Length: 229
Length: 199
Image (cartoon, rainbow over all chains, first blue to last red; front, side, top):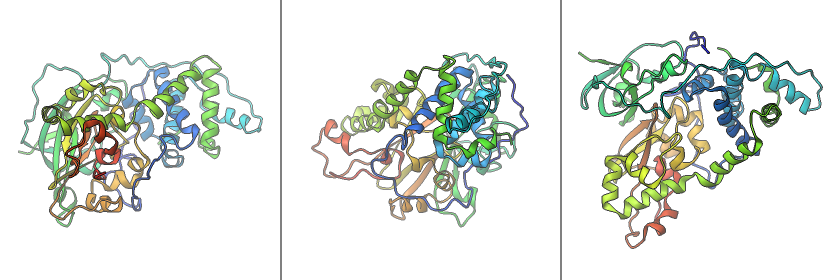
């Protein structure tokens, strides 16, 4: 299956540094794993749906990113998983687009006709190994201690190049194992494994001279970075 | 922006979840027992106790501590906690002068095998948005006041690398064994939004 790459990632999911969310609060003592029974079932059904559709974790994260604001935020974390799982199942032809709504209305005692089963459209995705880490025959393009710049580009489709570091300069503090590139893997366009770098940015570089003094490290795939000279 | 059918959102997520489970089970695509098994796993078997065992071992075994800080993945694999959403782990040490805290700004990446599923505070937009911009203020709101001379490093988990904080061992616990230390070590301290309190 191919997914339209016109859906840019620069949406609500890319939250780093965004404003308007209000305060945080002290952690609750003894918070249950699942506040309500449906949350556990939505979580488990999401894992099982991904297996059923043959989708990878990157494609799932992109499904979450393509939810509208209400679907992303309105029903909390487990509601978001449920809504993204619905998107996965409809795009892979397991369920018709209106199937869940129709069944839910019937469960609520509001009789509606349920849609016919769609044509299955199972993905052609075949991982070369379990998980995301891969061994590659390449030399890292950047060295620990080297100053690097996060590319200032807004990419179509899925990416893990967070907006708040784009165009900013940091220092490589660690080279992490090579990993499947989410930007292509999410769209079933290949694993393209590459080295991942933990890059340290000073708060003043990201947020200006008046920022609290601190540093951020973030993992950058090799193709997200460029030399500073 | 594409989305699922908007009109469906007028129905509570509990009912839509039930609808989804029916649709998948009646065609034999999913077994409700498999759903139950996953819930049991994440409610009972995988949780912060795993991470606490790693930290208690590091506090009581200097050689393991060095290994954990040098090659977290290998040291954690020895205890059996490498797996789904916890493929590669980097461990960072909190001290009196250096404080580390973990966030995922793009979703809610979290070391499931070590800490279980993420708590609600880790997933809220305010935490995801603000931890990389004003961590000292966020930590203060969450109940952790750090001295002005403490250096803060925030780790944004943007790839499959997962971060685990090795908290400071409280004074007055010198005589305790690893087994006695485990119950003191909290999830919040292993993410870096709290310290481990003395018993």
